[in-house]
Amino acid sequence: MSGVRHLASHAYAARPWRNGGGVTHDIVTVPAGAGDDDFLWRASIATIAAAGPFSVWPGIDRAFLLLRGELLLTIGGAGERRIAPGAAPILFAGEAAVAARPIDDPCTVLNLMARRGRRRIAADRWTTARPSAAAQILLLAEQPTNVRVHGDALALAQDDTLLLNGGVPTGLTFDRPLIAAEIFSQIAP
Image (cartoon, rainbow, N blue to C red; front, side, top):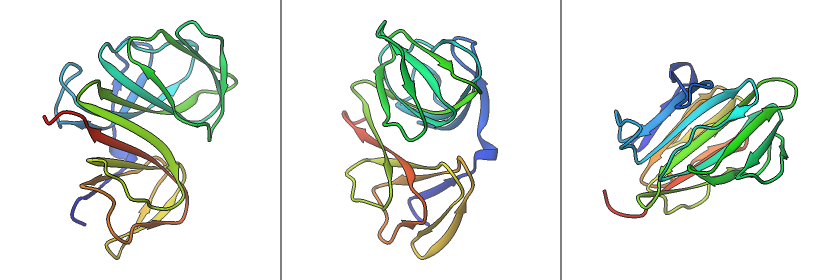
């Protein structure tokens, strides 16, 4: 499957949040091996178990999608917003003061980050494959999903991802909606 990489959720590496307030599981960092100061974009799945602030990331644009649970979210001193699964992606600057509070149980979220001026991320839920001019696309299964790509069948477990390089492959199909994070180049690396 040229240009398509299956990333299994059981293999995501755990690491502490930048502010030490929790743990995230890295899905992908581009370029591979980049650290906090030199990644172009990255994606991770985090658990929010208690009320607290998000890490501050100057120069980074962020997108946040709630996968499981419900929470109250505050961005930049605005009032709390109730966020439930299926909500539209929430975009904010990494410098913003952001805090979250789970409503009943811990929440699971998809966290997307892009270095401002170098990469831009757009996120949405796809019910079918669609054309995209993105340099890379990360597709995440919120529930077990059967995918066909280049004639090959793949079974994605919950939170598994597909990383597509060079656009959407012809004949890509899936039997459940997927979260699609489209990563656009803004300046050539």
